[in-house]
Structures are given as C-alpha cells and as structure tokens.
Image (cartoon, rainbow, N blue to C red; front, side, top):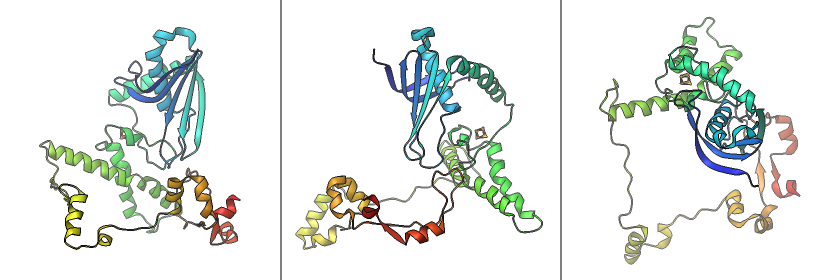
Amino acid sequence: MPPFVALESRVYYSRYAPDGYGRADCIMIYPPVLHVADYKNGTGIPVEAEENPQMMLYALGALETYAPIYGDSIDTIQMTIIQPNAGGVKEWSISRKDLEYWGAHTVRPAAELAYAGKGDFAPSTPNDGSEDRCHFCRAKATCTARSEMYLGLESYEAKKPALLTDAEVGGILERAAGLAAWASDLKDYALKTILNGGAIPGFKAVEGRSTREWDGGTDAAFNKLKERGVEEALLWERRPVTPPALEKALGKKPFEAVADLVVKKSGKPTLAPETDSRKSYNAAVIAFRGDCESVGAADG
Ligand code: SF4
C-alpha cells in the first residue's frame, strides 16, 4: 500500500504547549513509521535533524492528527531536514514512546513556565550554534532579555584596560550578527504601532520613496519615443550574461562549448561563524592553486 502523504499541513501540539502549532512541509505515514520532513532554504547555519525541537514538535502535532486514525500501528518517528544549501539531507529517528515522553516531561513543563511568565529566557543569535529561536518568536521585537543581550554590548565602553581581548571580539561579533535583525524587528514593531494609532517617542511614519513607472506600459511609451526619433539603443540596456546565468539558461550540454573559457576566481577571505559549512580559508592552498582556476580544466 502506498504511504499516506500530506504536504504543507498545519499541525497542532497544544496538548503539550498551549496554542502550539506549526506547518510541516511533508508528513508521510507508512506504519510503523511516521515521517516528518522539512525543507530549509537557508545557506547560513546548517540545521541538524537530531533532537531538533521544531521537528519533534511537528511530529507530536502530526501524531495528534493521525494517531486517532492509525492508532498503535505507528511506533517510530523519522525526521528529515532537507537543506540543499547547507549540509544536504539529515535524518534522525526516535521511538513514539520517547517522543511522547519528551512532549509530556520537557515541553509541557517548559511551556507552563513560559505561560506563567516564569522560567529562564534564552535569547539566541544567528551565530551561536543553535537555531535562532528569537527570529521566530512573537515577542522578538519587545522581549527584554533579547534587548539586554544586544544592549549589553555597551558594557565594554567602561572596560579597563581599554582594549578588547580576542575572546571578547569573538563574543561581540557573535552577538552583533543578530543586531541588524533585531533593529529591523524594532523598526517593524514601531511602524506598526504608529500606524495603529500608538506613539513611539522620537519617531513618526512618513511616506516612503516613490517610484516612477510607465502609465499604459513600456511598449506604448517606447513607441511614442521612437516615433519622435529616439534611437532604440537608448531605450534598452545591453549587458553580458554571467557564466552561471548562461549555463542555467542554456543547460549543461550546450554550455560545454565554452566551459574551457570559464575561470573561477578565488574569493577574498571573509569572516564566517565557526558553524559555517565552508572550509577554513587557507592562503597556502590558494597560492598553490594560482589566482584562478579553469573550471573546464578542473571538471575534466
Ligand atoms: S525573543 Fe525573548 S521570549 Fe522570544 S525566544 Fe528570544 S529570548 Fe525567548
């Protein structure tokens, strides 16, 4: 019998966390296995499947929906993260019993504490090696713990001696990685508040930069200009297509005709968090390889 498949399904796990729900990309059921798969498009931090709380919560939600139909025939929960741009496919499985135990003894007590306004806040940054929990939190703009994490950067001002240690630089960079996102969350919140009639001291809403477009379409405007003697060459920009864009447009086979003319330039060293999936920069390897390498030669 083919597996049951549900795509983009809302799953509710409010039995464990009040109002808890999520959207699972793909749920497959082929007893005794219930499989939850999630696609991640990000190129940043690779997301692990093992003990991934988001996936475990989705699996609990999927059980809430489908266990009344499949009953005890489900005993294994398989979870898959598909992240083509950072780490590929990761899989992990857990017994249904252990998952439900985690829901009852870890999630539920933590959710009860959070609902009561107790418990410890654990603000995260995009680079601290964990998934950026705050990014998906409804309180992300006005959470005091998150603001303290970023505003705490200022405590370095009064430091003696006056120079930061390398360890402090690393700590600051880790937190600063989320600073722009936090400021953007605050701006979104402030604008929404003002548009809803509230007030944020020192700020107001204004009309953003306007753009100009052709009324009636580009063709009508260009035809009129050409009738008046404006040359076609002035109306269009002509730019060469980059090798990757051309390969995408032509397909691999036709592109092979010029593949030996493509060179891959070495990228400049750039700072990345330790969790980044790329190899560490090695100047010796790059010098040995030369300033650039022929992609056609490397492939061949
Ligand atoms: S924004 Fe605050 S409440 Fe939300 S996850 Fe971060 S620390 Fe927790």
